[in-house]
Image 1 (cartoon, rainbow, N blue to C red):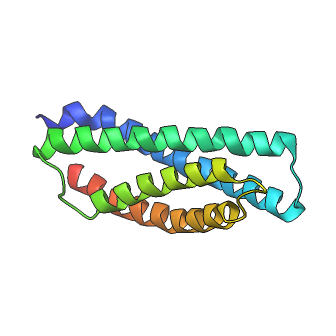
Image 2: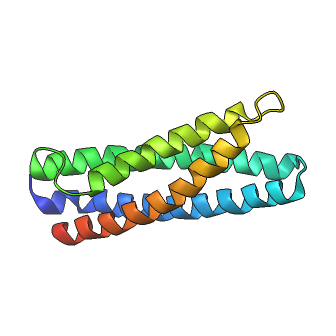
Image 3: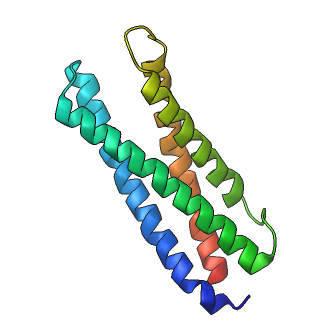
Length: 140
């Protein structure tokens, strides 16, 4: 396919990645605040939950853009380390969301798992951002 027809797609991806990073930072701030206070703040907990849903949706949007754009441009997937990095981010986001809904006094393992997954997610987001920048340079 003609590359200029994908410019709009890359713009959406760039904005979505920016929003993903901002959303992750909001998640980190609200999560640290809740953990530090050791109390359930209704508004803070709600903000954390809503931004978590937003993070899941943004990552799904980025996954769809990556698949459509890469197949449209190359005809297949797997042309860089960005694919495994992106898949790792998607997996970590879903495991984080799953572990979040498991958190309760009956499941003491869920909170440490959620925190550990989110620490890994920070590293994965940094790596996927770097590999994504390399991919963008190929298209431009």
